[in-house]
Structure formats: structure tokens, C-alpha cells
Figure 1 (tube, rainbow, N blue to C red):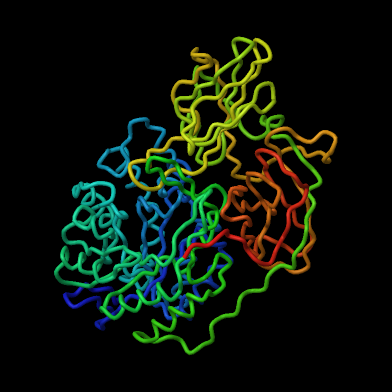
Figure 2: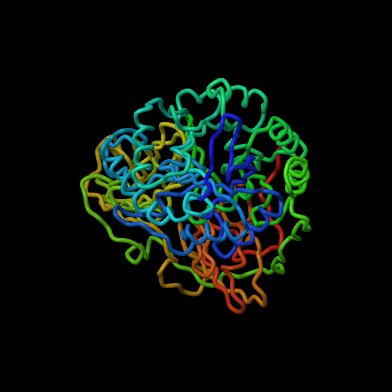
Length: 584
């Protein structure tokens, strides 16, 4: 079978020179019924390859479990890529960054309080071994050496920005080889990290968004011969809550692509199609201040979040045509969109009142971290009693990540990790008053040493300097639609604090759309049980992408978890997105 060869002069495949022209397309950020559409558009733009990460944390939500169903059906994605005649660059991690929760590392690893991730820690390597064994059992038939589309497999991910232990990289390489990988391995790093992130005998590639000549020169300095490749050519960027919508002009990024290809380099465009951080899957960064990544992963990519070609798509197609064949077919038109509709949410259910239906409580002398509860995403509800009445100051050693505080069911304040908040003053109405703290995991840090990012109330919790004991910790993963009892909304008695709100809308013909939540504050949305993701009035995005396949002809159910309050009872389906103020 033909396989990728790494020659001094460049890549070769089937005994012919090959320039890899690839684009990032993460199957787990796209509804599976839309994979074929996105892959077809990749081929039509002139790509000969697509790249995807593999999120270990979704495939293995608990130890010993490995899922390949529904949106995690990687073999089906690979079949569809092959059907379009596309090669694949597979990036299985185990760490992937990707602005994804924990960089794709399963949260259950953090149940061991002193585990060292991305290291030779035997507990970590044992888990990695089991993961790769399960993954590669499914993936080996798709290697190019066996007639499949996978040209090469990435070893770790930008490791040089994290550590410098080449023995660790060698351990991972040995695991990949032992589990049957016989196509080339490669590493990728930013120019300054190429020395630390590489491994002798493994192809080095470089990541950058600009400074093409300098980036390729740095790669050539560390790798005097062999293919030049930029494995992540950043053509946009991700957004964070409270920030702006980051963009990059089509002309500027297309000019840099031209420089790359003119230099004879291969490229993976990051991203061809960004997609969406559905559910609670977004990551975060913490370089002194915690910043959670937004739900949209539009990335100002070649296809927008709804999969429609952008101005960049046309500009990049024109550049690629100067260096490689481009199909003589027209650029696809934008997909149909929903007709705008206002939807009234007529029923509600208070979260605190129905917490018993949402998760099981565990009693302990101190609050338990989310990972100790066997939970990956969502919320933890902590409860105890206050020892005295009167003025009180609650102090929490670490809030991970956002804590809403209630006394006898009434909200008394919020503590946010992003604002470095630890203390909250309130008045306890009586001795033995009920203290409840609802903590949201806003996304685990996905880059740097902060990936050891446990969630919940961590460390000592005191009131007026006295340690509180006798805690109940209740996991509220929200990984399925909330099974709560709704009642008709009563404007004379609206719910206090976090509550679910439900309404219905009739749709004649399902199509892509965007859900606007003007007048709502912060929370999460499901449509027909599919978790669209988080919303937050601080922006930048004010709409959530609604993939056509989650809708059905006829009656559709919308459920909103509002953590605070709203000034309206309606949400709106629109035909255009609002991702916020742009910056080029």
C-alpha cells in the first residue's frame, strides 16, 4: 500500500511528490449529519487533506470506557473523508489544547490529587496506554499503510510550550508504535519551542499565523533537511467571554498563505471550519487571570460556524489554484436558514428546589471537588448550615470557577475566579440558616501548567474565620436535558435564582439558525435535548448556532437554564448570527 514518505526533498506518496494542503476540521465540533457537507467543501476549495484532533475526554468519559457513537464516530468521519478523496492528519494527543476543556485530557485523571499530567508519571502513562489501545483498535484500518486516508499521526501537541522531557515524548512514540501505528509521526511547536518539543527521528513541524519566513527559517534551523510544514497556520483566533470577536482580514491571511506555498512548504490551515463548543466543552486560559473560551469556535475560518463559505474561502481557493489543482466546480451557496421566530417560554422550574432530581449528594466534612464526585462538566451544589445569625463574611480559598451564594434560598452574591474573588459579606438571618453555593465549571484550562484544573470549592471554606464543616456536595452534570417538573410561569411569583425555562416552537422546514437571548443574563440552552452551549450577556456573542439536524418538522422544545434573571419571557430564532464587535 502507498504510504507517506519523508524524503530530504519533501513529502512523497505513492512514489510521487506530495504537497500537503490541509485544513482543520474537528469532527467533535460539528454535528455528525453535517460532516459530509463540510468535507465536500474542503475538497472543493482545493484541499487534499483534513486535520482533526481526537478528544480523549469525550471518548473516555470514565475510566475503562471508550465511546465511538453518534458525534464521536471517528471511523465514520474517516470513511467520509476517504469518500471525498481526502487524506487525514490525525492528532490523537493525548493532550490536544484546541481551546477544549482540559486540553482534551479526561477530568477523572485529576481525581488523583498529585498526578502529573503530560509527564512520565506511571498513572498518567498507564491511562494513556489504555486510551491509545482503544482508539487505535478502531483507527488502524484507516492508516494509509492499510489503504486508509490517515497519512500521519501527531505525537503530543506543542509540548515545547509545556516541558522539555524528551524521554516522555519517546514513551508516547513507543506506545503509538506498539499499538500498531506504522505511518510517520510528527510533532508541532511554535518557533521558539521547536528544540524542546521535538524528538530525534520524528518529523518536526511549526505553528504560526504570520512571520512566514521567520517561522520556516526556525524550522529549518532545527531540521536542516526534509519537508517544511506549518501544521497550524492560524488564520483567525478564538473568542473569550467578555472580550471581542477576533478576526483577521481575508487579504492578509491569503497573502501569508501565498508566501507559505511559494516557499514550497506544506500547510494545515487552522481552521478550515471551526464549528462550536457545544454543551460545556469549551476550554479556558489562565496566565494570571482566568479567561473562559466562548461557545462559538467560528475562529473567523474559511467556513463560518454554520458551514457557509466566507470571503476567506474564495481568497484561499484562488491562492491554492496557483500551486495545486482545484476542482472545476462552483463555490457552494450558503445553506438555507430558518425564518425568524419569537418563542415564548411559558413554563419554569427552580433549580435549587429540584436539585434532588438532578444529582446525588455526597456528605463530607469539606466540599468535594467535581473530579472527586466523578463528574466532568456542569455544576456542583454545595450545602451546609451557618453556625450563627448576624453579619457574616464567607471566605473560599479557591473558587473554580463561578460561585453563586444563597442563604435560605435567597441570592446574596457571586464569587468569580476571573475577578480573583474569595470573600463575600452577607447577613445570616438566623442560626442554622441554610447556605447553598452553586459552582459552575466554566471550562478547564487547556494550555500551560494550569491544566491541573480541578473544579468546585477547593481548600478551606470559612465564615467569620471559622471553618465550616458538615457539607453536602451534589454533582449536577447537566449532561442530559434536565428531568425536572415544570409549572406554568406566574408573573406574580417569578423564580428566584437559577431556574429552567421551557417553551415550544413549530417549524415547517428545519434549517440552520441562530438563537438570540436578548434580555437574558447567563446560562445554558438545549433544543430538543441537544445542548447548544452557554450564553452570557457580557458577550461577545449574543446568539447560539442551531444546527439544522437538531430540529424537526413540527413542534420543537427549547429549554433555557438561566442562572440569574431575565427581563423577558421570549427568545428569538434568527437567520443571521451575532458574534460581537469585530477586530481585524
